[in-house]
Image 1 (spheres, protein in one colour):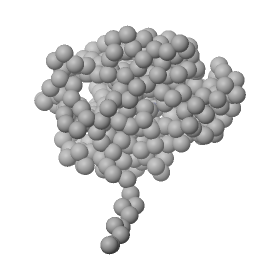
Image 2 (cartoon, helix red, strand yellow):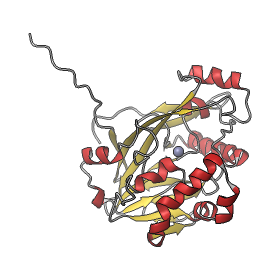
Image 3 (spheres, helix red, strand yellow):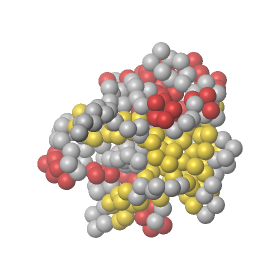
Length: 297
Ligand SMILES: [Zn+2]
């Protein structure tokens, strides 16, 4: 009996599901174990945070941060919602292009990129490490209030440390392609069946998406909450990476209440892959119930 050789590598990270006649492909970009300190949650003592990390089976010094982008094929357009890290944030992330290939989609086939907000894990995949566009034919659409806040030089000059790095990174991505970047007001439709909804707090122009076809819909939550093991269970927690803590909480509760009340299918950019499922309300917060893997579309 011959022993089978070990594969030694992970399978491609993609998962497909249908919303009406639209085909959605979740593409895994990878994961970042983001270092955190005792000040990580602004409005809770670290002992409580450590307890929550234990309940989510996470270490105490790192936040488990997976990344999932979405391709929505509406039948007339191939739309990419957020672009991943471009391999520029963590050595264990940057797999969107490989997983896109595994999904049978070429970068040149992406017609439209829609961005939720300007943090690097959402925009860096627009370009490769050498500053070349990864999706050569894609129109790029970004929220107007996000552009207004981050591309303002007075805001850049007032920033320091990591926040200043964030501003500089946005200029690296957008400055030389500004002419081809279209800005939309949250509330507008960016493609037939893809509505945008203002969801400020995490960043001033943070925007979420309602993808609807036929009688089905999907709420694309972006960074309304990061890992649900921490932030669905503790919706009142404000993290250091939220620009406006109290607005983050108000937006999170409003959207999560709506999703839980209506039993909506949701997806979160930092939810465990394939990042889709439902939210239910509990006595103290919410719990994410992952969708069941389906063998057929
Ligand atoms: Zn993010």
